[in-house]
Length: 169
Image (cartoon, rainbow, N blue to C red; front, side):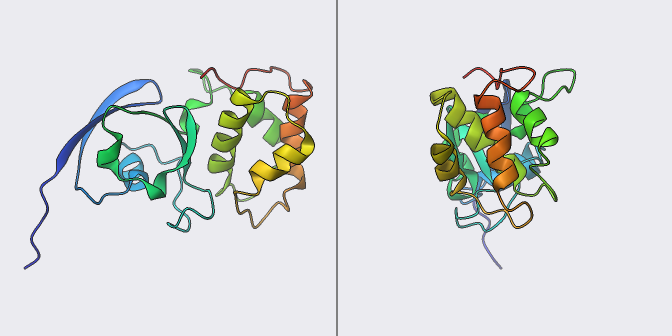
């Protein structure tokens, strides 16, 4: 019989709400977010930190949630793609730009890409196209060919999006 490891209580702030759940020591943050806390917008892709699908903001910094254990997050602030729309469900400027530019197709990678660019644009609101391409290099997308994603981000950067707000840090 396999001995079950004792669970540890983890309390963190998820998308502005304080939440608590129990996690085994080796439970990945992606699984904790999805299965314990119920925020299923964060996707699990490669489970090696390569594809970027699981990107969330941990204390304001874009991070691969498949490379962190849930128990490491006790006291942390986590933002997932669910945090981007307002309370009425209206998408923010970055999400709207993705919609307008058809910067997603199947959508599997989109949550992670949105979270990476949320962090990036908060830190650097006026990047060059080359800097946007560089950030996108940390993500794998098999559908769009990337051009529309870069165009969507540049639309926000250049102020063509209806609202410039991409969320306060």
